[in-house]
Length: 217
Image (tube, rainbow, N blue to C red; front, side, top):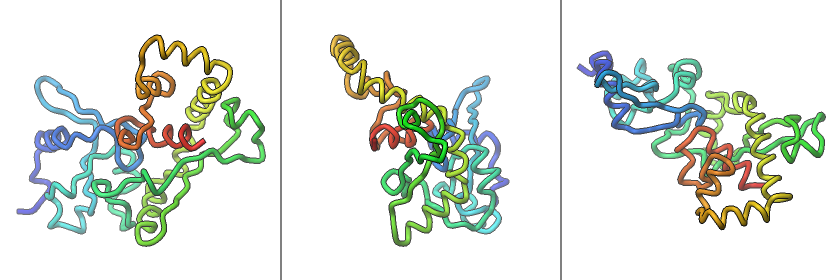
C-alpha cells in the first residue's frame, strides 16, 4: 500500500502547487514554476524523495520527504546516492556558507570591480561540527563549487554595478532615488535585481550569490 507509484501525475502536480516552493532549495539556481494548462495544475519541478524511495519505502508517501527540486539536482546529481546532505526544510546555506570572488593568476585590479571575469567563484564553509558534514555533502553532491563557475558573468555585472553605485554616480543615484521615494528594498531591486535580505534568499534564483557578493564586500 505504501507505494509512490500510487500517486497520479495530477496529484503530484497538485502537491507541488500546495508546497509552494519557487526556487530549487538544493542549488538556488533554477526556478520552480507552477502554472495552469487547460485548467489543470502543472509544475516544472521534480518531486524529490529526500530519503530515497528505493531504500526508505516507509517514507515514500510522506509529505515531509517530498522536496520540490529542479531536474538537474534531482535527476542528474542526487538520484539515490547515500550522501548525507542538508534537509532543506530544516536548514539552509544562509548562515554557514558564503560566496566570494577568488583571484587567480590571471586576475588584475579590474577583476574586483567588474572589469573582467578573470576570477573564480568560491563557496566558503564556516560551520564546524556535525552539520559541517551535511554541508560538505550537499556542496559535493550537487557540485555547487563547479556549477557556480558558470555565473562569472553575472558576478562581474554585480561587481560593476556595486562599483558604479558606490563611486562616480553615487550622489546622482542617491538624489534620483530620493526623488522617486524608493524604499531600501526597492533600490536593491532596481540596482541588483534582488532584495538583499536573508529572509529573501529563496525568492529568486542566485539570490544567495547576489547577497554574498554585494553585502560581504
